[in-house]
Amino acid sequence: MTTEFDPEQKFSRTAYADGPRLLADIGATHARFALETAPGVLRSVKVFKCDDFSGIVPLLDSYLADHPGIRLNHAAFALANPISGDMIRMTNRDWHFSTDDVRRELGLNTLLIVNDFTALAMSLPALPAKDLLQVGGGVPTPNAVSGVLGPGTGLGVSGVIPTLDGFVTLGSEGGHVSFAPADERELAVLQYAWKEWPHVSCERLISGPGMELIHRALAQRNGVAANARSSPEIISGALDERDPLCLEVLECFGGMLGGAAANLAVTLGAFGGIFIGGGIVPRMAELFAASPFRARFEAKGRFTDYLAHIPTYVIMTPNPAFYGVATILSEHLRGRSGANTLTDRVQQLKHELSPAEQRVATLVLEHPRKVLGEPIAEIARLADVSQPTVIRFCRSLGFLGLADFKLKFASSLTGTIPVRHSQVRISDSTHDLSAKVIDNTVSAILKFRDQLDVASIDRAIALLRKANRVEFYAVGNSRVVALDGQHKFFRFRIPTSSYGDAHLFKLAAELLNPGDVVIAISTTGQVPELLAAVDAARAAGADVIAITSSKSALAKKASICLAVDHSEDSTTFLSMISRMLQLLLIDIMSVGISLGGQGEEAGDTESRKLLISHLDI
Image (cartoon, rainbow, N blue to C red; front, side):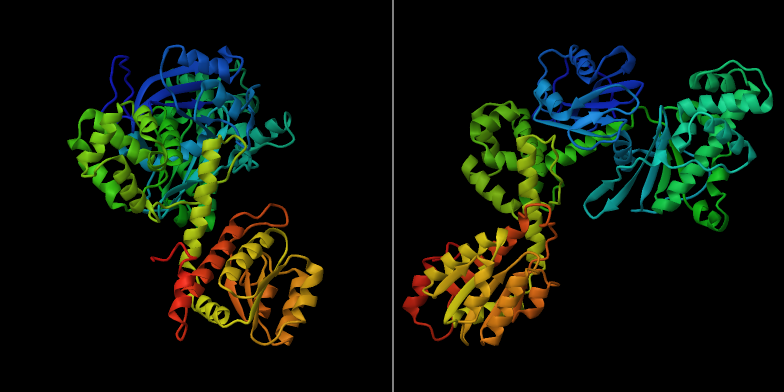
């Protein structure tokens, strides 16, 4: 990444249309900041000592004071801390804050806060070979899991898993696993540590403070009178003074880190490699490469050959977490773009546009949904161009204007942007939670579409076309779906009723006759009264269409099951997406009924078509 800063520099051709992005890597000791002005381009990298500030807001204010008037919309911070919910309480520093409060304080649209080693893990795929020092042998397997750990003030641990459309990182606190000694010397260090703590985790020893403890423990074990040293002083004592005790500390430290790295490798199956980050190891890279680290890494008994194939690297690039946190923010804002001919066209023609039009193109590529939903004035503001420039951009691509461009662009996006489930967090802004709810629903609908049992839908439509009467049985959240179905089917001149009182289900079912159809709707398919009513309906000669889970008791009792297998814990949470899928099945059957069947009068078919917006009439 480029890290020079020129305060007079204008945005480059690939600059972000909505302004630079604020990135931060905040540890217990130091905090690092940068402005990402374009993909991979960092400006104004600056390091602060956390001890100089009372909290995160004064720290941010100090950095931003050097950039008056700058327009910031999005930021992402890597934090040396577990991340859960809106309130953050730092483990190794007496700071606590609300993510949303900080976002509002800075006037941001988006603020992401992730664990620092989650960010470091996300950086691994982008790290060039020149930024890595390989220690020992092994060759990485393409598209394999990689692990990362690194000693600093604590011991961070994470991993990165390749998927079809990108990478998934692990939010881990693996540094707190129990330390296991491998020889008598490490046992002596552990016994020394037990005097201070009843539980000694790997982090207690494989970290900066841990290196200092090892120094004290080995001095006592060796009967050496040695002044206490900080971890930087121990490293310089070994490198510059060749102090025997400091050299032994680094040797012991390297072996311990090798054991922890091996445990991570076999736990993850990390054939993509194990990467060592953090602030300590790169400072002692030469000694570390000659330490027992690799020998200890491979010393795994029956799994020695297994580990010998896994490469190990030291991350030598400065500020590697910026790579990862920038990627996480970019993924959050943009989503992973899929095959899209119009998007490809914008990308290909971008270099032929004027500089102002390029900014509109950048906005289109990075925020397609925002461009589709905003008026021309807002698009111009976000791209920092005039409204006529927006029109010129559209015409440069061969469209009549913005409306024509939006129509074609929306069509090209439909069904082609891969979406995935994103957990809504307390810290999310209204913009973020809206996007997540919509994306989660779209993702579920696309998956549902691919898994539809068309044969069962055909059979259900055939039953409904010739039904004498249709009754809907549902309770709770599914009651809304039943009422929607009753309303639609009644418009088709089918005698229809809906029951939402579980006590009436069986009474109504016992009055049915052959040729009648029950549509029973239930997310769980386990409601006892509903199951009893289905038995009664089948006994009366009626058919039952169940909209429910394919593995439920209701599915087994029904004549036809239209499966909705989206997983939602409806006993604890309000079911939302399942309801949307159930409504879609009602709509699909409604359209199917409206198409009519052989032998129906043309006039009747036409009257039905008038009721369905999906049909081309």
